[in-house]
Length: 56
Image (cartoon, rainbow, N blue to C red; front, side, top):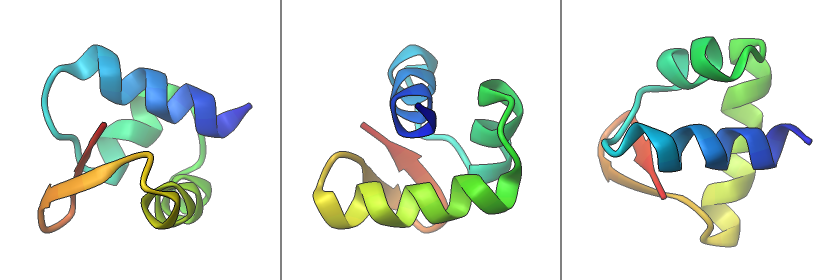
């Protein structure tokens, strides 16, 4: 599932990533990544340490 893939990418990165970087690493369309990021953020599964960067 895409959500798990994004969380895995963020865990493996070891640093906050921008949505475009997440999309490239996960092999998922960037529009789709943006939707999933918003959902995961609302659920509290990922956080945004600074604007436009995301981490677990």
